Image 1: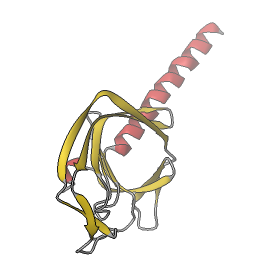
Image 2 (image 1 turned 180 degrees about the vertical axis):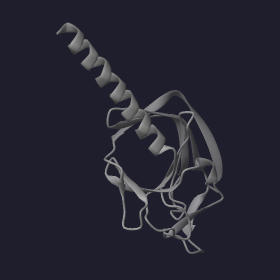
Image 3 (image 1 turned 135 degrees about the horizontal axis):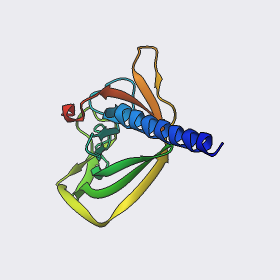
Length: 159
């Protein structure tokens, strides 16, 4: 009986590891918080197979001061754990009425891009749902409370 229980636990552990690897494989690529491409990328995550990630803020929100953040990612059960090591922000300048076709009323004028490395990586954790296919057979998943669509399996394809 003892051997049967040990065998069951070993099989269960291997199945859990295999399932986690499948989730990680599914995550590799570019995920956007919009099912359609606008005049720019919406909020976008890029997950790399080496455990790195980059989050890009919606390109159409020109009033946003945070441009991107990056660091490492890992899966813990049904959660994605992000350790944010670096942020790219716009500092200085002022917000003026937008002159182009932006998704915001304002854009920065005279602001400069600044990269800030966190002394201690900030930890961000969110639950993700099951991977599904939409009507166009594209992979989709909910990160936290936001639905994302997979745009490419290669995270390097982001412009």
